[in-house]
Length: 257
Image (tube, rainbow, N blue to C red; front, top):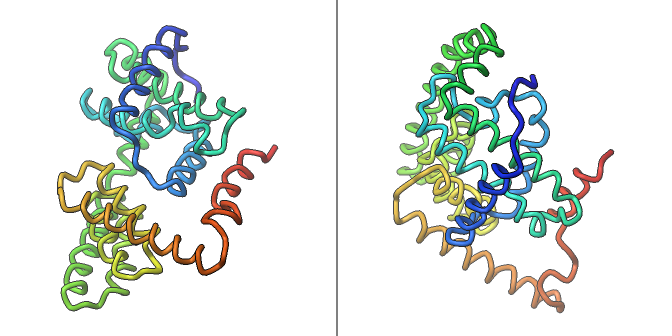
C-alpha cells in the first residue's frame, strides 16, 4: 500500500552519510550468507509491507523503538554493501531498501506524518495488529517453552534435540538469548561452525550485552578459518579458488527478470 510521502534528495544524502560513517566505525559483522539471505528476504516483501512491518515494529511503537529498528535495518541494507553482496551495477536494489527504511523512519517519528499515515492505513492497521496479537502471544509462549526445554537438554548434553528446539524457538520469536544459546551449542560441532557464526552474530545484532558472545564468535571464526585453510591445503589449491557458491545464489536471485 503506497501511502507515504516522498523523500527529498537532501534527506537521502543526510541519512546515507550518517549510516555510512556508523558502518565505518562499527562494521556490520554479519556473516555474508546471512546478510545476502536477509537482503533477498526484504526485497521480496518491500512492495507489500507497511512501514511498521518493514521496520519490524508495532503500531504502538515508541520513537526510540522506531529509531532502534531503523538503525538495525539501515545498516543492513546500506548501498555501501553492494560490492560485498555481489550487486555492483545493481546498487538500486539496496538504494530501494534503504530509501524505504528511511522513509518509514521519518514518517513514524514525526507526529503529523505518522498521524496521516495511520489515517490512510485506516482500520486495517489496528485490525491486523489486534488479530495478530493473541496469536503472537501464544507463539512467543511456545518459543519460550522450547528455550527452557533446550536449556535442560543442553545441561544433560543432549545437544542435537536442544539445537532443534532452539532453531524452532528462534524462528518463531527471534530473541537474542535464543540465537546465543543456539550458536554456542552449534559451535560444539565442527560441521556447524558456519551456522554457529551466523547465530552468534544474530544474537549480538539483536542487542545481547553478554561479552562472552563476542569471545565465542571470535573463536568460531578462528576455528572455521583454520578448517577452511586446512581443507584448501589438502586439496592442493589456494582457499577460494573454486569460487563462492553462496555468492552466486544471491546474484542469481537478483538476475531473475
